[in-house]
Image 1: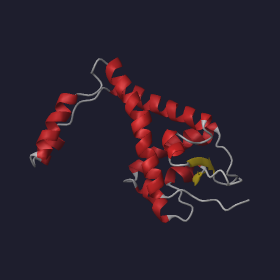
Image 2: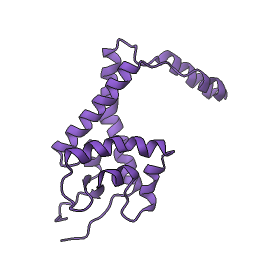
Image 3: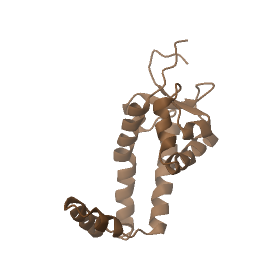
Length: 166
């Protein structure tokens, strides 16, 4: 059995970036059109960009576009569902993780995660976020590269090397 190689902060960051492009953005576009444009006011968003680019950050921050809670919740639930489906189909990997050759595994057995771990990990993102992102930055400083959401769910992110026999 070869040594486990934990995926570090930047690999995980880019995997998340790719997942945003390939999972969250398409879901967002679908929700935007299903809501007939009521989910998010892009005209206000464009105005805020204009304010920010002209150096008026205070005005940009004070005029946030209104969002519909109903459509926001639907978006969040669909992203969660799509993510869970990918974890199941690709043995712990979303498209971004597949692209970066990493996967989510049980932290002890290094086997596939179960549904409870998947849901706990997804909800654990809230804890990682609400701790001023410290839950995510933990990955950079821990030897096992686990974030708060990993610790809560009992998961780890490792390289999915073909020659790695776990």
